[in-house]
Image (cartoon, rainbow, N blue to C red; front, side):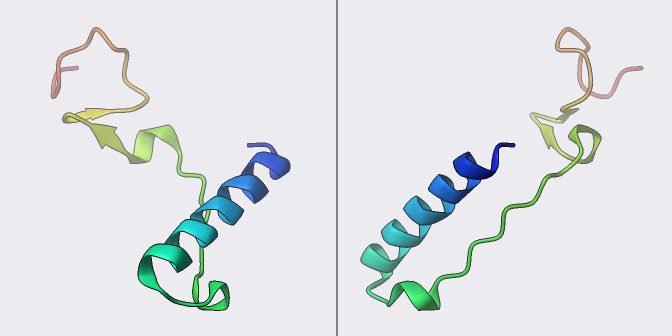
Length: 58
């Protein structure tokens, strides 16, 4: 989570959103939040679970 990388991401998202939405850049707000891996999931499996464990098993 390098600050320079976040700054580049925010700048690109702002530029693209303003262009597509047809609004000024000042109207675009971007939030960058770190979320612990145990607080999100893909395909029913928490991100902090080992990849070889089937969803919903312990």
